[in-house]
Length: 229
Picture 1: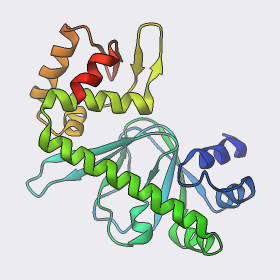
Picture 2 (picture 1 turned 120 degrees about the vertical axis):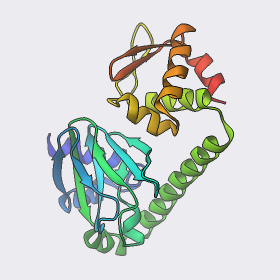
Picture 3 (picture 1 turned 45 degrees about the vertical axis):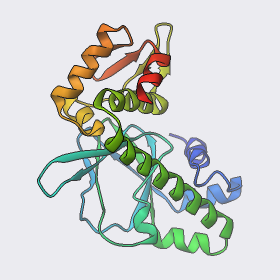
């Protein structure tokens, strides 16, 4: 992967899109690259966090283990997305475990380097706050969904969200290679595997989706959107 491509990745991260090319190049020079195999862990919940990461290719799931031992999937992130940025402003243990669900490449940036970079660029700090606020708002919305919507509605919403990140438009519909197991999909929806599978089977029988291993084909986006409300 050439330098230019990676610089474009930096530009595609909402956080850094305000930077001019020179600053993007300067930021890129502070970063190092790392790669993960499927199933490999980037960091564990409770680890000290001293850097943030930008995904350049692949997928990473963010998981959290509840006190009773149940696993929750908080998000699946794709290229151009950030992870580990919370410890930047509030150094401390990682609040989630980050695991690759596909072969993944990332750029990593140490907090100290970013803090020095921010010193002379107050507008970037404002952008970072805005991006953090947007992520917080999304988290609040998905928490509200967990409380107020039924499982099929949450399944529909999760499929649409995965389609936004990883979907490819084909002649048949939107092909979404999410790379998640049934168990991981259930953890993302926040329900049991049986209930989630029942919802998926119902969507299949209605002709809204087609299941293909660790991928799904969305055939009727309108119906799914209505179901997700």
